[in-house]
Length: 188
View 1 (cartoon, helix red, strand yellow):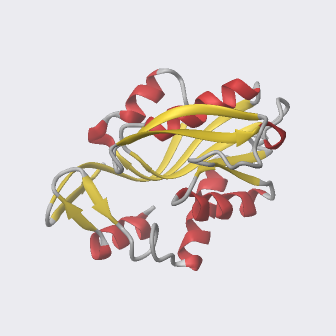
View 2: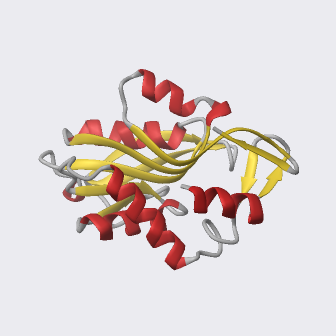
View 3: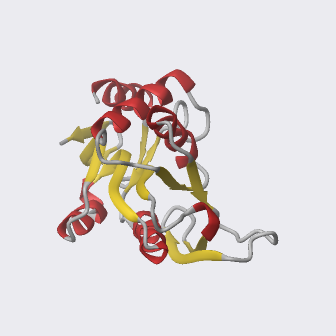
């Protein structure tokens, strides 16, 4: 998506060689109109896949996942990083957060992910693939079908997407980055 690449180049900040800060429009401050356009683009890429539910993990993926779900006219569910005291019957998967440098258990209430669903996973970033693997695990636990994953920004050099694609998973990415360093971003 050229508009996304342009925004990344204009507003993104590369920290080191692995962190891309896009907090002006995606994961701190949100540009709602832009989020809706990205959501429509991802929804269009999965048109005809029979998607009945969108799944993401809190918190940064929620805005884009909501935009995708709105375009598809289906509900969106987000995995919680801390199980609420009101949640008792849940699917759980452990993921490692490279951003936070810690392992967390993500949970989804079973009532929000029935076995007859066809799920599209949506997230803001794909790097090592830990969050995506955890969400795939939860979908598999539920017995639901998996249409694939829609990702806003994929850092190809961190290989998470390659590993999941090798397992046969369909992943659609709006902006794929081959490499980056301060002052330079190279898109695929």
